[in-house]
Length: 46
Image (cartoon, rainbow, N blue to C red):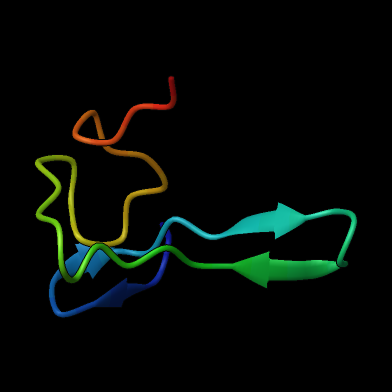
């Protein structure tokens, strides 16, 4: 089971070019998938 912060599962993933694990936190734009989810449907690239 992944670690939790504030009752939210952390979705860590490896950034291979940098060799580090990263964590996204949606603090200014709410995310229905969770604060620490990697992606949100509210943001789109043209």
